[in-house]
Length: 159
Image (cartoon, rainbow, N blue to C red; front, side, top):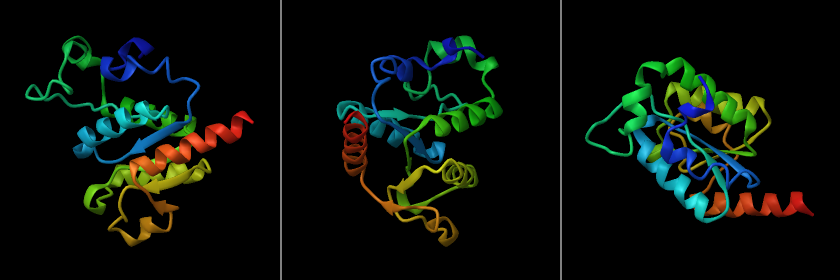
């Protein structure tokens, strides 16, 4: 896989965000629309959100179904996306768990553990319903609070 396989809606702004603090979004792909909302909110706040790529297609949702999927769907695999997301986690400055209702699935739990192993601060949108995961979460914060934290981190690093 090459960089040309980046979904267009995620690639358009990635270059302009290269100097910004990176916040990797972790969560079930059932919350992908919410992740994209947070990604866009972060962009308006000069924070680079790193979003997992879905490996599914939904013709009813144009954000999940575009020319990229028509031409590249056969090249995309769940394994590749998992490996790529682990790389995103290792590139991030902060991890943010998108977990409406407190839901954290198995893959997200693995991602959280990996982020902790990379010594990232891990924040969650809501308190995880799994008490074991709670020990790995630094605190619960809103996307706006994460954006402020990321901007502060960038300011401290610059000075």
